[in-house]
Length: 130
Image (cartoon, rainbow, N blue to C red; front, top):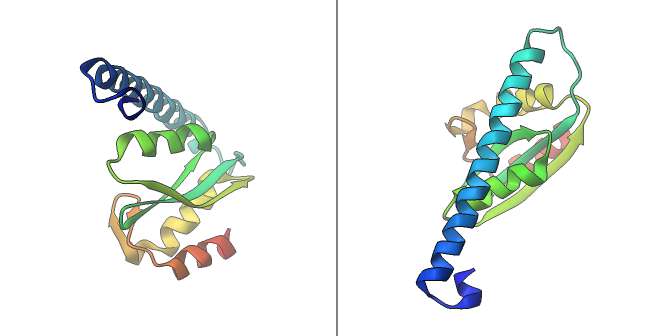
């Protein structure tokens, strides 16, 4: 916002308020999805539709899942100082299982958590797997 309205105190405050609101919205969405996983996680292979994705931020790649990818991607834009780029996003019938498959497939390239050091060829392989 402050790029549009100038580098003023008011525009910086408006930008910060918008970023804080987006961050809170993303935190709430993550909590909802964690609670849903607790409910459905104990059921035997229940098929839950959603999105599986790979997002690149800087030199790292995030393998993840979301019921609402657009909202999740906004989190990456808000939370990261570097540009977030969508490398792969696909709607699947069972997004929890699809994520597990990719996390296992690329476990040797794990940097930390669900962040990986992948190559472009790895991303192409992920697309074929899912």
